[in-house]
Length: 125
Image (cartoon, rainbow, N blue to C red):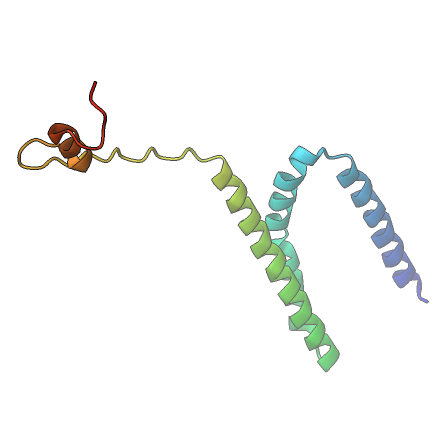
């Protein structure tokens, strides 16, 4: 095992532990907004995947670039979808326009008004 690989693995494991510690301290109410914003920002991962594809010279490199691009694209898309859903929850709903009551030519308000006018359907006291 080379020194460079050992250094890279050490940095990766330390970053993993720091990430778990930081995410563990976030309250549940803030977790989804932070994660959706973080996923959207991770578009840089897509750039890294494209760089892998540019520098690849073997079949394994091309497959790795394809898989990395696929996961990075799904990550970015998922971040935007979750953010859109969250923002939709906080939008004010437009009030529905009131439906005007239909009146007949004689001034009756629909069937109910007509029934009331001729005395059927309701008990009159």
